[in-house]
Length: 50
Image (cartoon, rainbow, N blue to C red; front, side):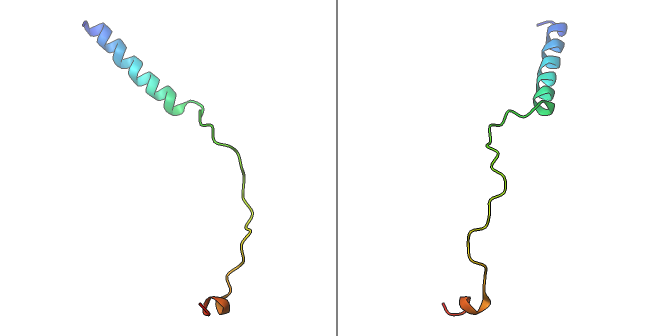
């Protein structure tokens, strides 16, 4: 393998990694937002009865 092909291969490898790091996200997470609290608040007196 000649030096020019090896240099081109290394350059392509590094540039593809940089494009993946700094490119837009391809995550498919749903946007669910903040979930409301549906439980009971802690009360010190009731927890002592266990």
